[in-house]
Image (cartoon, rainbow, N blue to C red; front, side):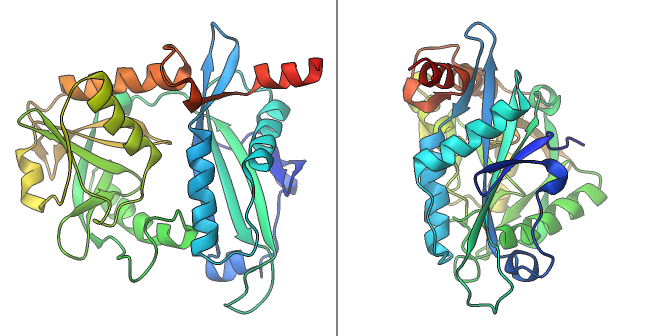
Length: 314
């Protein structure tokens, strides 16, 4: 199990991992009053730099979540980026990393409290998992994905993830790698911590944003890659449970798990039971964009060390 690095950023200051603490009676603990962003940094050996992927989009979604949860402090892009870079520089990362940014209510107050808002950032080394190459086996969960009238699925609210955790644990107990969740209408929503795609008749299909999915940045990236770089048609629509068994290919995606092929669902093989050509092409293009092996979409990559060196020189 990966563990966070030695130094974290707590309310703008670098602290040791063991000193990054909140009170056990805080609203974050009592009520799950928090939300987070998971983002990636990819090391480019040729450039000798660490690239943060689609940082602007992550900050936009983070602030949207703060507003939806009625937190009384919104953090601007510059402050959040500065805190992330401080964390990475303090730990001297020269490898791929996963970064977790958490906003939380740092108070001992009643349920309607909206502040004060704390901010913590941690990171860990995250090499590519073997599952990215070999694929995973998933099961449709008996747990239903939260509805938009119960909890906000578009927000990465900490409390939402009890729902995801129940589904994931059930799948693992039953011998699968993770779960696929249905929404209250019985249509496919998303994986326990990821978005779902399938290929059918050469078309890339994914549940639409009204199916209870997180509006995932990785999902958006792969839709753009498919349409713009690979010329593959993409359809966002409702997906019935039984349709997934007709998939020629399938995969889950998220910043943390990247692009993981699904080779079986409910013990039934997807297509040939291996990793398909469309999935592999999407993977390769995704990693090229994220680590800066291609010049396309430079606005999606924020360098950590080059920009810091330039600032120091000035």
